Image (cartoon, rainbow, N blue to C red):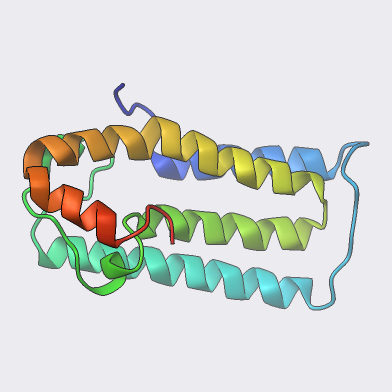
Length: 150
């Protein structure tokens, strides 16, 4: 399986689907107090998580291109990568959670679940296969110590 769609594009697709779902007859609307504050908080956490991961990749001088995981030159295991093997994707999920709260539609819980499943199957698992091939037992040990998402 080869990665073809960049994760930020999956974010945009999921966000658009969430907006459409929130304006449909099956939306199951809800309202939370301070939804706009929660939106900002989740988006800020998501962006910060992604930027921390990006900084660590740059510091390790390895690729940040999610479509070419086979070009990785280092296995980053410290910092935010000691809590999540995929902090950039976790950051995207946090952004979508904020969007879901702000939209106020229960149907979007399904979109969030679908986002996790799609990203795991179409992006993360191919990346994991490439990293196993590149780093062997070191990557296997890392997988035993750190969870895929959180």
